Image (cartoon, rainbow over all chains, first blue to last red; front, top):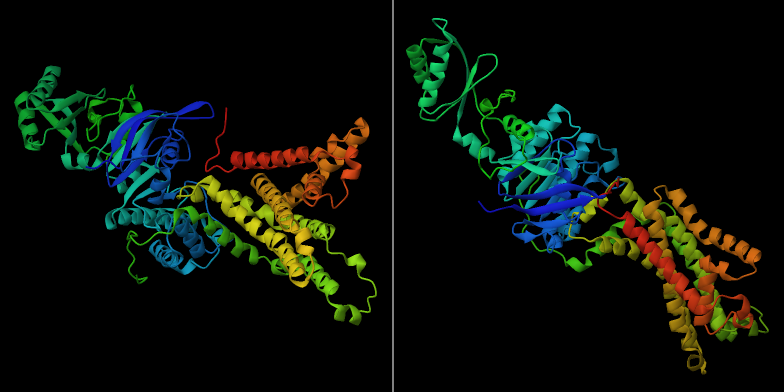
Length: 336
Length: 293
């Protein structure tokens, strides 16, 4: 997988404070999610990649080009949808998008043609001759998306694209992002604090916490690995506590990773080759009754919570799954 | 692509030349300016002084028109350096008024709508953004200062059959340089104030205040201290000193040299003002505001 973004000990200081602390990592997904709580450095990272903030140390590369030395060239192939309102209020929508496309280097005629296309694409075709200042919040978000894609960028930065959108508008935005991802030769970097947005749109995620990388995870790989997370509620048939321990040991012997929770349930990760009936036979052998069984797969929420609650901020290598949530007693279940 | 084909496609066509993209900003700003009601009429009004003085030049050379107008003596209509410096002074006032009207909206509207990140996320530097906005004022102010001024000069050269050109050729470069300095100062000042003052009316007031408040305070300082250095803060006075020097003392300042600021100091003061404007612009024109603390 070719790296879209490479972070090489990237440090950014703003107003005397360190905002990004030596980020290192490589992101190569078609659609990359930047996750993290408010103030974790997601927008600062995007702004730095766009050349708005100079790195205090280290650097980053986009498609192999250094942001320190090739900022203008890089920006020619980047589309950016900012988090806050950003527009020219006294221009009509289509002229606003045409203006932005021209600034990205498109000749006037092509810019106009693509501005019309972009407006129809985002579903604002009928409103394209209205002044942007008169648009509703949802329409402004769509207009921002239109200006970001009108010039046909190779990389699209979307900073909180679903901010302030009602559920249907959010769904439409997410659908558009997925279409853009799937249709053209474009990479997307989506910054959000909404797990659902990232989960629905991205195949790779970088989680930031306090300006450091808490985790990098390849969601696509996670999904493909199809690891089986099971939560069991068991009781001993003869009332002896030892039989549950024996059941746990037997499951570990066939390759399951097990953990007992305080309420007595057992959380386990089953290897791909182990099937559920095997658990029943093991339970029967150990004199244990399985009273309840919940299946769940790893979700972005699990990964996120794991990253947030992890003591160290050490980044995991790209594509390496974090320890399963079942292994962490503090993790709440929140499956898909 | 037909509008019903609603799918994303990348662009692989030709791109415009990168160094000249700032002119796109100028073009769109012009479109916005000419959409303002009465802007065209006001701009045309700014050409009147040049037209009137061009007529005077024609009048001094046309005995027929003089006879028709029953003018016996046209000596008071001497076409010399004073004639051109007066034209420059009048046009300078028009330039100030027009700048105060249109200048404050140029940058402030982009800042008010947070559009700067959109501009600067494209292959466009802050300097190019400023250049694009500055071209607007530069072109507008030039159109009725040095351009018609030089045309009046050319008219005089064409109509005069004697040695006028030989004796006064230096007026043309002096006029060009004098107007250019004034236009540059006004453009930079208007953009700097536009970047700091969001409201248009307040921006216009601030621009006028920049010319009149320091001038008044400077004169008060002069009276109190019995010195002349208060005039260093009076842009109108400073530009007059520079123009007078460029036009070989046409305004007779040298006879009262003791009460005037030396020309090099006037130049230095003007340059300082321009640098302060550039600093103000560089402080304000950022894609992202950094809050310290």
